[in-house]
Length: 236
Length: 236
Image 1 (cartoon, each protein chain N blue to C red):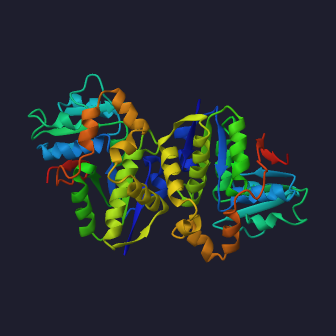
Image 2: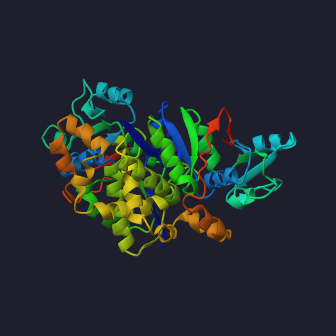
Image 3: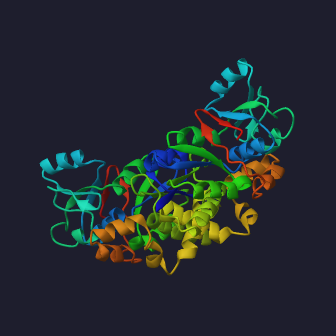
């Protein structure tokens, strides 16, 4: 039997750190959703980096670079972190370097663990199957918003906890996993309404990202499970 | 109008930091419950310190010192952090220096803000009234367990959010406040059963602290609201 834990912010990762675990990096709005969409649409690799300076260095070397801060594409970069940025020939069969406000931080921090995969509603069933086929502990690492707890990532984590819990493979749930699970059970079937009051949801609505939000809340858009290998995610 | 935020761990405090807010330090099992009980039973002052070395230094100067780590009284110290340690002549009219695994950390970290008060189920209605009588933002700072989210502190925070929300004085709830509130609403009336699976609850049960747990879950045992003044809490 094994355990599932939820870490509500990358800032708490050191308190939860389990180097034997599979880390699921979660940034529903929008980095990990965009990465799932990108692989579904034929991107060949994605290389997450922590900051804009690193991203600029790759850009100078000729890489295609995605950079987002505060919900907007950073000036001077080719693409942002909207899932729709990764659906054209511009990115198909290309390697993309990506830095975002919260999501890439979670990925880089989680890379200390045994394995990091990327989760979002877009690939939730594929992630569930991947975790059930393994025999490892699971750490759901929410990107949050600038270190803070956020609703969308914890609701996703809660749904994944519920699915893993139902499998009877996991006998130990952390307090955070218990909370996230109940939180999901309460919101189930009504997640859009539930998120109406979310601070990040409001932030994105102000940026006219309604289309992105609706896209990111779809389940099982893809069966891809991006998995970090050395420093990048490769197309399976 | 003003806002209420919940910070689920002292490790996240920098992400939430609002120096204009009243911070409510929360460590239900057991530091802030013990402090509420202590003032109800006539302790004259409590001086929170971060670590055992500081506590030892005070002990050498002749102070009465409480020290707890991992749920147990630290060897060589007079008292621990059970509420029942503060109900006799040993502590009455005395100043007590206190260090605990999680609770005193939350207090010391929160002391950067405008004001720090101590909250627990034992004084929940008094804390509610205190906050409603003020016009400041509110930050509910959960001590958690070694940096991690815990159920009991977040359930308490959720009940306080619900009470403040009902007053219509607070128009802005952080994502964490929304989550804690729904979490409380789900658990209401059944908190003991809900906490059965809590890791810290299990930890304390293993230490035969059932009596302490039942005590700490009582509401409105006292009307005292311990308030940090300079570096210590004084009897009102």
